[in-house]
Image (tube, rainbow, N blue to C red):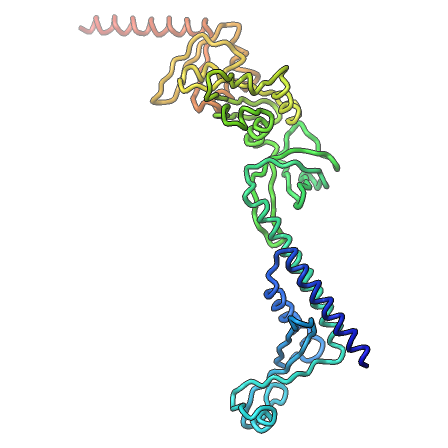
Length: 375
């Protein structure tokens, strides 16, 4: 019997030590963990022994031993001996007790240790899972708008689940490049668009289509951006097809386009490769709207740009042979340029501009003649 008591005592100390180590390692408040276990033990006791009794269960912080105390209210006449105790019986325990005081009587069942240990283990595992979820959320909650590298874990329907280290992130169909397929084990870079806490843990949403991904990829490749000399002013992106990036240098000696392109096109090619061959036009930003608009239509050559700053509308004239290039396939080049600059862009060829000017001149002449006749 003494040997069993010693075993239980040693087991309690081992459990206590394990509990303390886990609490420290996972950053869980030790006292709150003890209190949670005690509450869970009360439910376990009522489920296995007596649901009618009012009990308190104590987990010793020194030995790790469990103790069950029946809580009974002192009354003059006992009507329910499970929850009540007479004043005479109470004062036999302690003469200081009075009516409506609560007496605690230890009544730990002989086989409660096994149930208590199982319950405590379940509580600890649950709290560890909660702590892990909380720690993961804390790690990623401020990383929205950041770039991560992950490995595809599984594909469910059109949703792709990516292992990004301590967490699993979701790349939804709407955030995937239309030119890409994703398979188990694939390594990819993605942009974190949202991190939110849910009952099942942190939910991290990724994107391969967000303009921010393009910006972060250039920042990784271009040292001048890391130094703050070259800056991306604007991005217009049709993911998987084509993008335009407007760049600016705070130092005249540094060519922002050259810095982004890199020696032998190495830097921009690395970004293109990462985005599955997406075409990228790098243009020079300017605070002069006409210059900026002309640059934005690269690779087309521009003859002139007229701007209406009040309405943010511009008319661009290009050589006849450059019209289709300026507009682009299905209007893509003009559309991206407008998005990049924030201006509405009306593109005309030289011939069209000449015809338009002739029509406007004829209208003006007709108006003048009409006004003269009326006079």
